Length: 340
Image: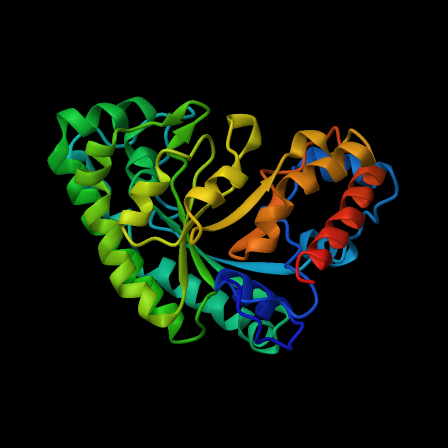
């Protein structure tokens, strides 16, 4: 249920109010939750976008709200990398212990704290909301074990997976505590990507054993500050929503339409779930009628609260600058209408 008690019109308050199912004073937040594809920006520069503008300046040029980013990287820059995409640098407990000196470093923590200090003024003025990015308990082991090795490890190396996620959880809590001494982010984003276009890449039984206990500890440490926790996972996340809610997590994004995700049905089933994304990027080059139809499709969710509308992934390079400006015009129209 929406609560109307806000008179402020800053980015931070728009985001906070939306995350807390409170009504915004002027409009919903208008954000790109992830930066545009490089080829998309390169096309726009050829079509008239000022080539001198960087990412944040492009955001301002388009009149979008800023969600600034703090990252807590458990794998340091000095750590060896896989020789192939999706490959491994860890195969067992011994090899994991061997690279531990490159993981969970104090330098990484200090970098996150320094980023928070640099954002503090923007945050206090309300000019930006803050998203705290953390590796999650599916993403992190995969980055070390590789795609194939990670999936086999659920069955062959349970002790190793638990060790990794225990270490990761301690690190994530420690970094959050240090950063929260500087500022309290609006939400934590747990990087997972544990679904594809046919659903989760693990069963509920494996989720319950290898992720749920660590999620609950993270929730216990973070939620008392008022910061929300969302899972970032591409693909069809519909089935796993009940799993993350069981852990006490608040929401999930980006709800990719091409994977069959329907945020209207999800809102009917989970009225208190926080969502972000949901707008089908594949209609953005199809003209006003198609873009407006997509906004009409998600408009009931926009009105319901707890939903930050955005493209359901990065804007593709087939979208012209004129296409995007048309999208932004309609975006503002519907974000304003949603709070009336």
